[in-house]
Image (tube, rainbow over all chains, first blue to last red; front, side, top):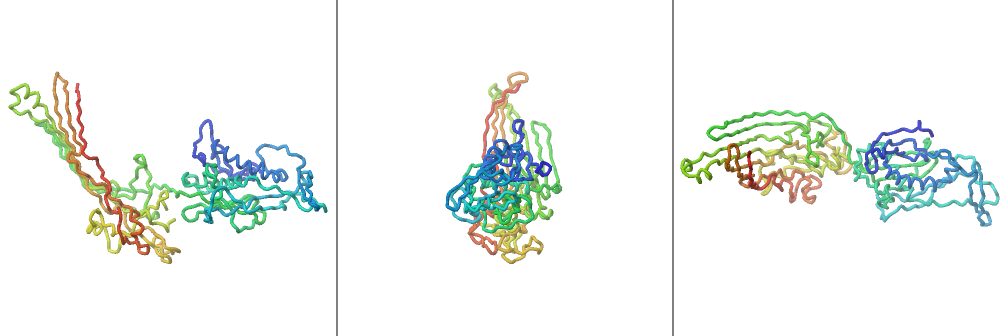
Length: 399
Length: 161
């Protein structure tokens, strides 16, 4: 496996916590399948250091502990250069008389035994009662992995002792991570709002509910000509992404890991197809200051028509994009009065310096109190804004 | 086809309804007649209208409706601001100003646009097969807020120099 065989999808923000690159942490690349499992596709600049520590911790448990035997025997790719391998691996065999015998086999002679966990179906999909963690129902064992070694044909040996997997939960989280990273590569990070990626908390270890989202179903799809790991993703009801992950898909009958709990927040297509027209009759009447009185009256009769009026975000700032209601394939379907259209708009502002009454000049108090009064004001009267009737409960057939 | 996670579609006109019938015969307390609108239900096995006859619903669901954008008009808005100012000149070009400013002098409420989302109708009030509102329409069509402040009075002293 060389770097040139790896395809890259550029992301540019941490897919787990959405952190942006900084000078301290320029973000690292995230393999969909771990590099050590022949992952050939990666997300560039897609994991911050904090999240990478979390994901590499469980991937390490799987690869360097539960899969250590297989990796040593077959020589999986590793980022750590040529690992110093022991030339022999200890194996335990059960002899015909029941005794356990430890034999050191040289690497070429060691049998390649693949052990994969088999889980219950994801509780979220099977709607089974679920508490926490992830439950294994068995192992998938395969000793036919192409390799020179084999179980010694020694008449004395009855069984090979195989250690159970120690980290089922780490496996589950690894599959969840693979599925999420795959979904991001397929649909783009913008399709997933963090709150809608239910499985994210399980990946990051914030909740212990990985079995709710990850599991195996009963069907085994036989491997085809795929050479290594495969994943497929599609969107099911309620916009949820369902991902199937298979390790070593070229082996017959390997378990399929189903991961659900990644919800697409909808796809955003930005089009520059809005059109607007505005026709109006505007009149104003101004009286400049004379005899202490001035006013400005204006009236506009207008009609603004468009197919999208822009909008404002949660902070009230105007923005250029707005969700389009109704039939998005028909631009004219949204043609109507602008959201801000007001048919009539009348504004009067005035300022009036009140004349001092003539009797007030007879006394100082009168001059002081009754002179220099001013009144002013603004009167606004306008039509109401259009009402857009919508139905947030409809559109279920539109996905 | 969604905006965010919320389906953003419009309902259909009830049979025979249009913009002018929707704003006549309103039930007391409503700015438009909620019964003029129906949820665009497509029964299982029926053609989905928006598919131009290419798709049939495999289960009962909802399409988008035929109501256009911004078909009704909200309540008009009137506001009167008023101020009284008294100046006390005390030097060549200096004066003290006492100002009393009244915003929304008559404390006239301007009603905001009504609730315009048909999903404000309780689900139990919508006939699942026809999409018609058969019971209490809830807040759909009701104004539940004002768009302006109440009367505010502000006093100020200004020294102009």
